[in-house]
Image 1 (cartoon, rainbow, N blue to C red):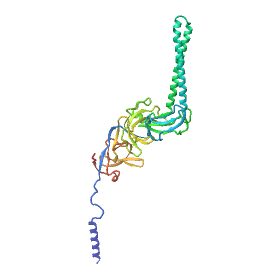
Image 2 (image 1 turned 180 degrees about the horizontal axis):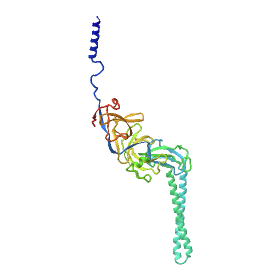
Image 3 (image 1 turned 180 degrees about the vertical axis):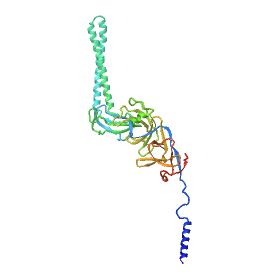
Image 4 (image 1 turned 90 degrees about the vertical axis):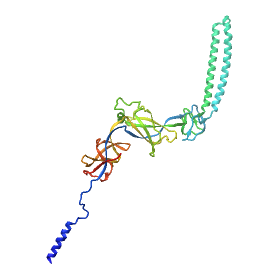
Length: 375
């Protein structure tokens, strides 16, 4: 009986030893396949993003040329107005009285001129026969010249008063959007009053933006030239694009206008002004927008596909495959995006291979089968 038990136990142990255990493979796991891409060196023009506000390239300040009581306002604040459209009218009655007075003064001066002219013409032949002295002739001639001057003065005063009547009707010098300064009908307006400015009309055919470029980036883009900023920066910006606050790309490209005279020493920037056409009136003054533009000449950079970059909080890195097909995680310094690529400013060399797919299955020192990703 004991021999049977011992034999049975030995048989069970032998059977267990010969039976494969569940969950354990008898062969090694296959190496993971990953797609890789080469970090390439290119010469590219680096784009920059600028947060800005839209503004009118030209504002016309509406100021009354004469003083008087405001009779009418013929527009709606914030709405478009056309060039030549009547905006305000002032009480012209006091000025029209001046017109009547000046017309009378002109008529009187003309009568005096006619009398002085006749006296002078009669005196000339008398002086030739010595019937009057030369000094008397000179007096007649001076009176005639004075009378002509008085007519010219009276005529200019009449013309000025007629102009002042015209000035009581105030029209818009340009087409644009009008902003009211607050004067109401019945207010005394004009030079030296509380309402020396009645409104502002902003031209919106073109909309301007201020592009503030940091000093360091500006001089880098201009090739490191010294001597202060240049006022001729027409070729510095290219492909100027505008994105609205909702991320929509504006369909028209911008153009360089001018460089502002004063450098922003407190902000450390050079401000360049660009303009965008606004034929459909999509752009509004004061609207927030983002401007993206290529700045400067092509520079040498290292590019990797965006899908190769792993970003965690404030750090970024890539999985690098070496010549022995081993992967390792590398922390890198990112620059700007360039199309479907990231610009790598540090931590990766041109020509190194980076993984672009299957990144979540990797760990440092792992061996992989690398396949070049299709472009």
